[in-house]
Length: 532
Image (cartoon, rainbow, N blue to C red; front, top):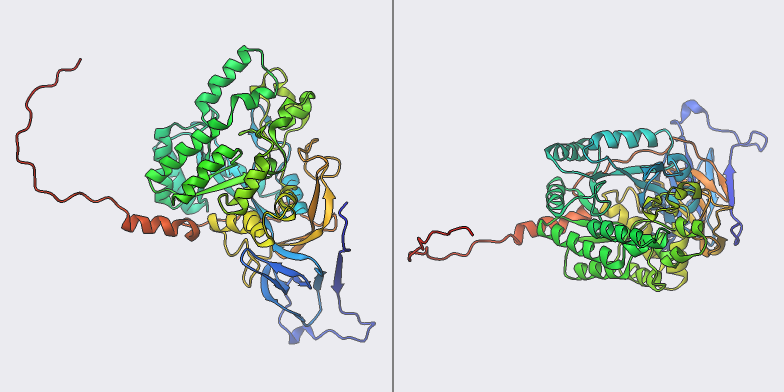
């Protein structure tokens, strides 16, 4: 239970008994369906914090300013945010709800997953539509959307994975970008023979992402090395969860990260590296950014809040519950290192890779670590974990917190300023955040569907006390007011300016040109070359 200042919600209504008479309906324009006033808080965006009230009509922010006094009070909901922060709702750029994967399906569907999200202060997720090799990207998109639309409690979008390459894939990528609002495509360098692309295919996919104005995403691990390492470990009798991390050491992630950045840079394609999990991979990405490459790094709550020493736990179920790809790193200094890079902008975004499996599902790999379904929780916990490890620790301020949990994601994926900011005209996806309150994370009290929480027992400063989605209070003081299907699919236009301004300018001024020289007029060898 969160502890801290009491939280109050007041609804003002006209009362005939009080002597007030409502104005005649025929004399007034119809009142908005939803009116909300957030009073007395500090509005925190990525660039500034100001003491201000926020007024919302029908899901859109209409006014931001001090001491707003709205008339009439009819149907006006007032939220008291005194001594609290009013921040843009979180955007989780990496989730896998009801994902069919490794012989099972992730436990949280789009209802339980988004319900848990709003409890933690996240008001939008971006999930992944992932076709099997040889299957249609458009059909995968339509399938995932059919799962999500009737269930989501908050807004969502879909990345689409490119798991094979052909002219048909190109045509479908173009259709998705032009007709379905998809501006990001994910390529896998891991999961050999399932999702993995080779370097030539990556080059082609990145090139076409650039042509479409999309953001190329990559899961960066060397799938060939993982496959060989796994065979070797199993032959040695190592079958438990420790085999998962031993088969995927840091250098496997770092090498693939360097390779992906090199290929993307060769075709002037902006790159978004998902779930940066290790110090070595993070260093590769940070160095690339300092060299001027257009690359963004996403790290996740799991590797900021815990580490890979759990893979050696004597309790098989505990160890298996932490299995994910790439794995958590056993170096206990990793979470602190990644948070520092996140604070100083070497890393750009926090997400979760939320993909929950309960212990019975994990037990599919009880005799073979390669069959343990990969995935952990986080969609409800991310905001508090980042606040605790980032802001409460003194590594980042409240504005950087907003940037890495919401605004940067909105900018990279062309949702800004409708999302990721509290300003006139923005969507009213808003969280009232109590920086002084604490909560203890536990599977016994969380709203995620799985039976284990990798952050079990962590005490977090910083608690979401109310969540507003599209102007509706969907979570307040532990009580939900959600409706399945009330969230909306959000289209994302191509060529996000935050990403593509530099890319387009480089195309204008950084193209190679031939050297002007006199033609060669000397002798040319006529000696035939005999193949060996």
